[in-house]
Length: 221
Image 1 (tube, rainbow, N blue to C red):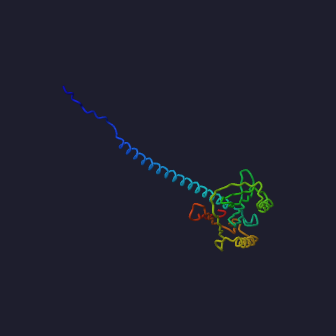
Image 2: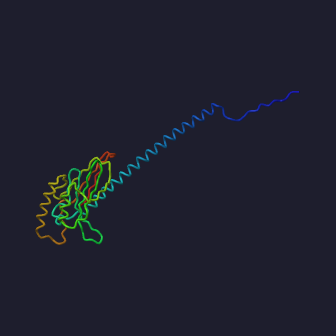
Image 3: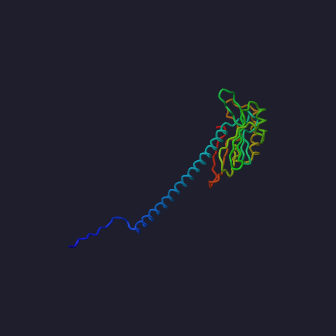
């Protein structure tokens, strides 16, 4: 008596099929990692770029505030602004709550690619102002704030009425002498103040930018 044998097949994958599946999964993992790495790198670049833009905007805004508060020439007997060699100095009016108006000397300079803003304590008299202007590198008691880094160069020009743009402080001094001589005459009480500089053009070149970024700021406005 014969037994009817039946072939029994076990379901599963062969070794070749497993190797093919593992290879495909490895390729997908590599491609996914490369895509994720590119996304992370792009995110980092965008984050750095946005941080630089915010720092640059803060720098321009702070200079704009200081030049809008520039003191009047007839009150201090000289130009409230001086520039040259990538540096900018501003004598500004400082109005503190509950106190009489004061003056303050603000300086912008760029040591080792960093833009620093140094500001003197409030100055109550012209004598204190003269001492602050003559302080030079000895700025004990002055506040120092770093506004941004990665700066290659800072260039500045001034708009002098009846002359135009100039990067020479001698042009400003000539206009100042003319204005101060005219102040001895009679002027209408409501006449606008006379200024030797009515605007500045500030150009900043940073490391990651192809071109210099420029902003024009009005003085005393």
